[in-house]
Image (cartoon, rainbow, N blue to C red; front, side, top):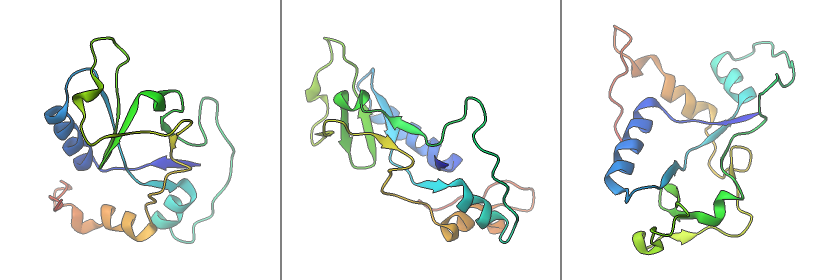
Length: 141
């Protein structure tokens, strides 16, 4: 199983920057790293016994943030994908320097080209990242 990962602070920054850039009606999808759940467990508890129980009802093997159907209306810019509305009032010219995605493209956690490594995860969850009251410290951008 794989999942996409981002910190709360990264998520907040993404939302704010999306609000600043929006024209109205778009869906913004961040380009973020993936991680295998087995790697997550081994990073958090090295040497622990891992019991494979299989997929539970309703659970997915991998996350899909842009399906191949949505890719037809999706643009690729630096750090995000923009799923454009298919309404007649929407102008594709709203986004300059954005590239359309290729036919059949799918943005999913198992085929992602950015992967979060164990050391990167450890840095994100390091005790130094929180103060003595358990409040996350400000992480530089």
